[in-house]
Structures are given as structure tokens and as C-alpha cells.
Length: 119
Image (cartoon, rainbow, N blue to C red; front, side, top):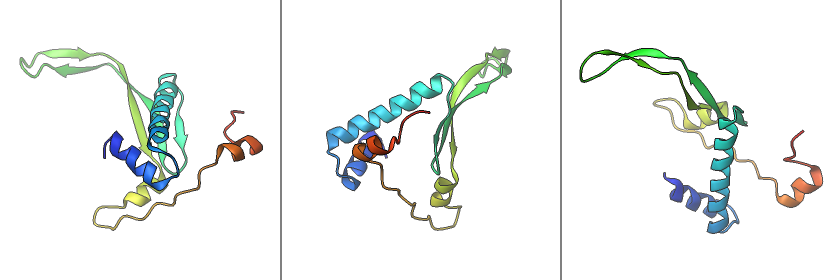
């Protein structure tokens, strides 16, 4: 599934129009990238966590010449699947389990309850 297919799938399962769904997906991706690039972990309970993995400097080999080279230290994005996601996907040879989908909080409800505010 690519991004356009994801937008179509979300649009069909919600009351959002396609333009709003596309904006949401773009905002979600942007928020995850911004947070992780600033060193924060992004947790989506049951789904998984996005973070940055630190890779140490190491020795490698040039595939053409076989000569040893130094591969510099680097940061790389990392995703760790949550239990509900792993259970939904199932193990090899098992039938996948239908994931439990929670009803999202509307803007009206979030404003009244304070949901979504940082503490």
C-alpha cells in the first residue's frame, strides 16, 4: 500500500473527505519526522514506537577493491512494532487477527476533556 492508497483507505473508513485525510496523513508524517529528528520517541500504544537508532563507526570493505574503509557513525530512523500490531499480523502459518480499532477523539471532545494537551 502506498500513501495514496492509505489516504483512500482512511477516507473510506472515516467521515473525512479525501483532502482532509491527505492533510492528516501529511501532518502525521511531518510530526513523527520532526519529533524523532529532535531525539524524541513517538509512542502509539499498541501500534509501535518511532525513534532514532545510533550506529557506531565501524570498519567495512569497498566491494569493488576489497580495501578496508571506515564507515562513519550515523543516526537512522527505527520503528519497533507494538504488541497489538504484532498480534494482528500473526505469526508465520497463522491467520492474521483483525485489529481492534478505537474510536478517535473528536475536536469537540478533546477541547472539553483536555485530551491531546501536553503536560
